[in-house]
Image (cartoon, rainbow, N blue to C red; front, side):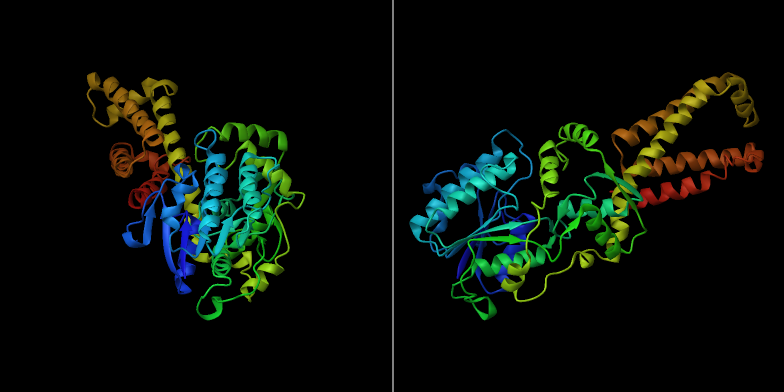
Length: 431
């Protein structure tokens, strides 16, 4: 049996491709770019957005028994991308499959998709679903809830959020999700693609495949509950998750929508609101029956080994920002905030000639400001080494010339020790 997997470099597509191969199915992956570890004979490089005619698809479907469409975007780069990628291209694909008599089609959609849904994402998915259901093809529309994959962008984000000590989220204790693990979803897609085919082992002839299937995990939970499950899996410290008021959430969504990589947008917030009414949950029994085994519980999604990486994803930028502010504040205080007479006396104690004290103070303030600005604008590994040398140099000089600062109750020199350790850490772990 030969299967064509579209969107095979995405989270779901790549796992579905591996699941089909593990089941003994001959597969061809398709995406905009071929991964380096894939053989050219097993891959097709296509721009899905240009495949809007049935004739575009016919050459690619020759000899194909099953098609799995995992192409999807969460945000538009240009207006109309949702309609182009979620409706126009899939409709052309389904028409070509029908003309050639492709045995099976599996369409990856989303729970909540409908032609009259509240967001463009759901509407575009729903329009393609409706077209597929109206055809004579043997097809299944798979509608997952939230999908957990170890390297998935949303899963990386949720693990990071789970390790924060305090967090405010819109509808954290109201919106319901029913997360499914990517391994379970991929196995489900593979079974559906091979349903009724001449597949080996247990993948063959699983019976009448459903036309529509909600691909959900074993239990529904709130967003706060999901974060708690991930936190427990990582054995992370307890956290406090609070509800962010919807007026503030809507304001934040409008601002965040201007950032290309932001997951928070007005549309995603509307989908979250709808999930509070159970729109993102379903009965998991059909999926369990299809797989013939229990589904992986969210409490076992994350692992203790992922805790440090999850914390580091937000701790590293936080450290960078706070150290940058330290340099900037030091620069301002040195030149504008602290009495120059006191600074001149310290420089004199360090043996700096009178004519060079003012220029040296200005140069030191400028250097501190430059380091802080570079950390905020263009953080680089070498910059942490430079800070280590600069702060270490300050510490050594003051230890020799002004040793009384070691005895100061506010610890202006002793506090440099943890800072130097932190700079050393950042130097060694930065890319």
